[in-house]
Image 1 (spheres, rainbow, N blue to C red):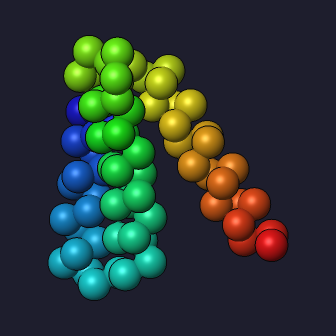
Image 2 (image 1 turned 180 degrees about the horizontal axis):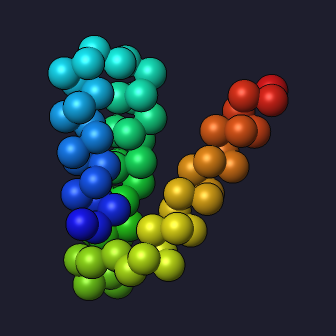
Length: 68
């Protein structure tokens, strides 16, 4: 199961459990992956390394926002 599929499954679970904070975070991650897939010069698929870089970047941004 790819990361994107795992996130989509987790989104469904969060929706059913009505976990708003978790759902917001998962949607943000899914959005970042979709943007990477559709950006100019991309072939429509994101490698595992690129996914990890996206997650690391998103986590860093969230942490910096929380510190402010």
